[in-house]
Image (cartoon, rainbow, N blue to C red; front, side):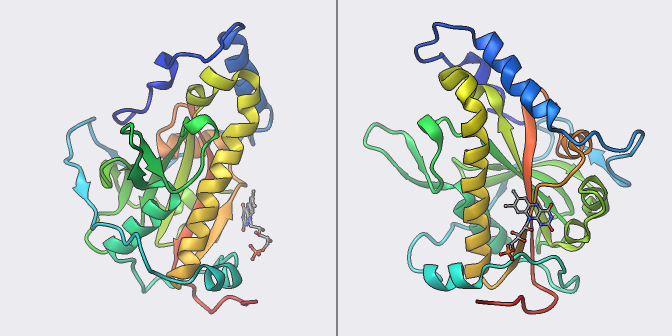
Length: 266
Ligand SMILES: Cc1cc2nc3c(=O)[nH]c(=O)nc-3n(C[C@H](O)[C@H](O)[C@H](O)COP(=O)(O)O)c2cc1C
């Protein structure tokens, strides 16, 4: 797992009279009970070369535009689920960075030095981590990366053509195969459980929805298409995104790219 991702268990529980262990089990069991089991023996990737932790240098993303930009009303009106993408078009590196920033990037700092983010989060626990699978982004090798919101950088985790694996893990959805990038949204459960115990079950998924909503609107504003993907084989996507499925698991995926045809706009 990449740096700074398993700190949740060490976080102090606010008002934890109770049973953090029990709450953890409750959330995890609810997650498992609603999992799609997947196809036995399915391989996560045809070409997948994992990197040793720390072996590849972080990549700096161009600074995000944080003022001006596309109109919010236009983005709201134009957003549609796009399931077919133009394979001849790649995202600019800055565009991927802009999307990641819009999703849950650093939007400022509080007077006390706390990092402020573009998406709200219950209790400011920020359990959601972003992992872009890069199929077609200029200047980036195909593979999987982790977004470091605090410094707006990408950490490479593995190189390889993962579009096919993403499509297979998403129950053969071509949107994931064809997209220029597929962002995996994981949750580090304990970050939220340590404060909210069983109620964390609600907040984890609500937090993921806020981040995904930001991604969809940013994509629409940039003239790109997006598709939310909630139907997937859980074990397969966890393996693909290198989440252990216990303390961290994939809750959602968002496919992004240039639409093959103009989506029906309102
Ligand atoms: C939680 C959630 C999960 C979804 N999962 C999928 C999915 O796995 N595949 C897909 O093609 N669309 C998925 N969608 C997109 C919906 O089908 C789509 O939003 C809906 O049909 C309305 O169309 P619109 O987004 O174009 O307005 C999902 C949407 C949500 C909110």
